[in-house]
Structure formats: structure tokens, C-alpha cells
Length: 68
Image (cartoon, rainbow, N blue to C red):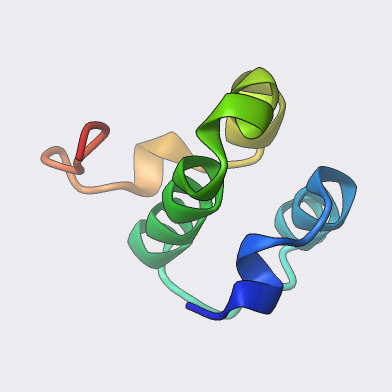
């Protein structure tokens, strides 16, 4: 995970998710989004629902970690 990714604007992250530009498993995508949020939770927490709207939750394993 690079600092560049962790610091991208929420709109850029949503575009990556919305247009399926990530060639990774949904578990990996979820993990990246989770790290992006945790990187600056104080400022990014307000985007939680907006970002998770584009996570394909039914494709995640049943034991995915929502809490670190």
C-alpha cells in the first residue's frame, strides 16, 4: 500500500470502485478501502457509507474483518 493511494481523494477512490478499475479480488479491494479509511479516520470516516456503496459485499468471504 503506497502513500499515494492512501492519500487519494475520495472521488478518485469511488471512481476506481465504481468503474471496476481494480483488478483484484473483492477481499483485497475491501482491505485497501479499509486501510484508506483508517489512514486518516478523523477526516475520512464521513465517507464510509459513500465508499462502501461500491464494495460488492456478497462477494466477500463470510469472515472478513471489519475491525482491526
